[in-house]
Amino acid sequence: MEREFAVKAKGVIKSYDNNHALNGIDLEVRSGQVLGLIGPNGAGKSTFLQAVLGLLNTEGELEVLGLDPRKERHKLLQKVCSITDVAVLPKWMTVEQVLQYVDGVHPRFNLEKAKSILSKTDIKNNSKIKTLSRGLVVQLHLSIVMAIDAELLVLDEPTLGLDLVYRKEFYSQLIEDYYDGNKTILISTHQVEEIEGVLSDAIFMNQGRIVMKDSIDAINERFLELRPNQESLERARSLNPMHIRTELGREVFLFEGTGIDKLNELGEVRPPFIADLFMAIMDKTKSEGQG
Amino acid sequence: MNTLVTLIRRELQEHKVGFIYAPFIVTCVLSLVVISVYFGLTDIQTTEFNFTTKIYENEQALEWMATADIEQITAVMRSGLVVLALPILLTVAFAILAFNLSTFADERKDRTLIFWRSLPVSDLTTVMSKILLVTLIIPLIVLPNIILLHLISLLSASIYFATNDIVPFGWVWSAYSFTDWFRIIFSLWAQSLWSLPLMAWLMFAGAFAKRPIMGAFVPIAVVVVLEGIVFKTNHIFHFIEDRLGFWTSGLPEQLEEVRVVDVSDIYLMFSTQDFWIGMALSTLLIGGIVYFRSRNNDYSSE
Image 1 (cartoon, each protein chain N blue to C red):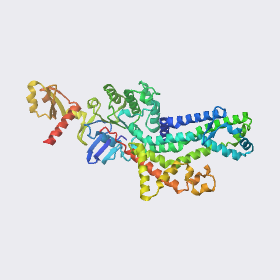
Image 2 (image 1 turned 30 degrees about the vertical axis):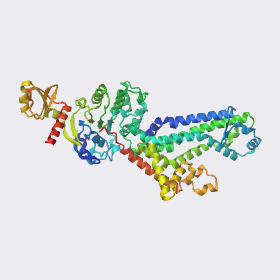
Image 3 (image 1 turned 90 degrees about the vertical axis):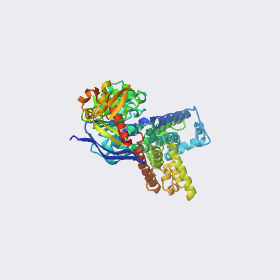
Image 4 (image 1 turned 45 degrees about the vertical axis):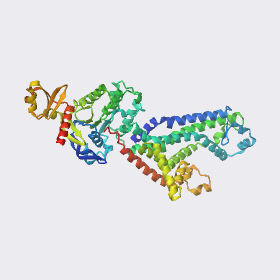
């Protein structure tokens, strides 16, 4: 039976001393979603993902693939795969040893599939991981993950420290070869612009709270960015944009819920980049807080 | 079961230098020394220990060899072989000490803990695999080295005795009991169980302390000193001292006064309170290791 929700969180709180790393997270992630967790450092993204993986005790209700992640972590990890920073594969191991190890401990790992994926790369089975370049280690880690028949994939800053080429390669390989529409993927990264093309949904987090959650399609319908012509500047301003920023000396207006037809007359219109939208929402939240 | 085998195999792959290569190299060096002595290339003579063929120039020694019965020869040979194998055991003991201190600290330090914990292996299974490795598996790995050293020593001695017309070639072999191999392995297992509280403590220190060496030794030193000052006793010090010694210290006290203890007395160790105090302490420490390992999630990027 197909599960409707991969993750259900209600009032999830995680406190360290007097600080709330998670401050009442309510979230439902449908099976098959590719959800991006977007937010600054300290927003609670990694904390939430760790809670999903059963690595942290939290207050509130949290259910992952129908299981309590903290109490049934062992059972959960048979259905969940995670990459938290790619540079954590044991350097002393050879490629063959790490494959044999995962094969020995993971009931859903397909050794033949992993070897077949690796055969298309420059990675040799007898190479020690410490001799592989960072890019190859990423490929190896991804090959392992792709050979695991998991229902949920959790990626917490998976490409931290990688150069642009490898980051792009990582995500394109992930979506082209791994994502089949049934698997659920949770991704947290600072390089938002690199993942927005692969996301189906996004949540914006700040100070342990979710400040916005929606599907990418809905976000693109709801928010529009306008680069007005010089003569339309005042008209654009009168439409009450939610945020204005300056880009190369030119003002860029962000509108929420304003019809595209109305904006098209005033200049160049397109959906905002997720990162820009996030910054705008943060600025708005801040100014509302001050007001 | 497959998971446990995989975990133990991983540990052996990671620590092959300490657990496999080092004892084998020591065995080879000792074997070369034995061969050199019997072939007249060298002598070892210290105030504590003599290993030389010069003793066979002594009339009394030759007479003893000609007249001793099998049991006497076996006893002498057995004690000689035990002493000979001590460097192998010390090497492994040192490797185990280093392993116990570092195994849970290193995985935090190099962040491989993140990878290990991303796979469906419980902390308890991981900890138990390491305990099984040091108590059950390492003795099994050490055993072939000791057997190899025994066989090389016996062969060298037989050739020496036969070629020098001291005793016939088969003299040594007739007194060597191949059942001693079982005696050795059971003795090593008994030793592991006897020393388990210390091994578990070192692992525990590695699991909770940023500096495992400090974490292992400073609290012990403090507690020993405090016990001395407050209670004027030294039970903790003696407990540690005992566990550093041979497993025979775990046998009922009066036994040694009656007769020489033997490996067949191991079962008597299970009847002592001391042994079970050690096992209870080990269980608590293992629980502590699991607890601290499961809480080591400070690798968050935020």
